Length: 341
Image (cartoon, rainbow, N blue to C red; front, top):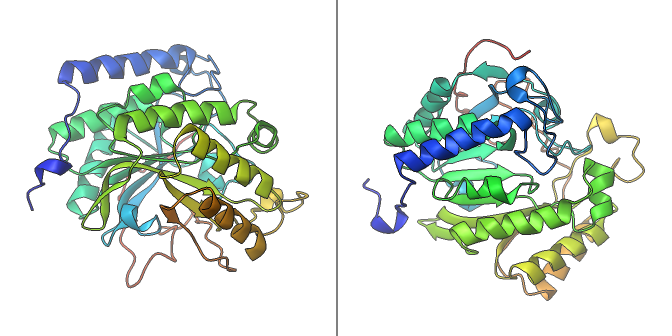
């Protein structure tokens, strides 16, 4: 079906894309891709917090049905999980791939083919998950895929700990931002993710995202095509942090922004002895956060049930999200068989 005019966007010119790719690659020589600003030379075999050099490390790529309804739609998001995250949260639900460069080393050309294959499979979008540390190669691949007639939205799924200068490089490329707003309290961000300045970085970078795509999640035929959806995972024993997140979003952006309040936190082995994170959240904790959001005027809310299901994916399996499937799980998109070091 021909894409309607209102769904089209103007990509940056070829020369502008090349300029951005070169600037992003240059940043690897003294890495400043995220607010940690490790300043290591990733082109010379040095490693910062993310533990990644200049190659693409792919964890998994497949049609994903477990995102919010406007992102997954009926055919699934074309989700590409990249290895290693710049935040390193101690409780991360994707801990198998987020804390180390676990996966397959692939070329830009292989990533282009994966992107175009997900589109051919009927996915509603290309969803990039924790792409920040690998942005130079990802933007190059997206540029080539666009030349190859890629014609579905690009979703940028990140932890919210981003540099505004880097987010600016994505203007005209990303259609939908899907950032977390994890911490409204700086001390909580330091205790759980080892960063001192999470709230201020999230406010600035998400503000930049909103400037690019607007504060409204725009939907056509039940599927999002532009805008922002801010996520927040409610953690056990941290409702004060969640309330601070809600106030920060309301005060700095708007209570009309689309907001996903997630109840799916499940303890991983790394936090089984943590004084607070060892358990699931209670219905009372989650309800308190939802009620506060409603009282603050948030009316574009996505919420979940509080139940005993474990929604932690197993990336050692061919189908990490086995709860997604209603019939037969779709085959993951193959990548290079060469394992990452």
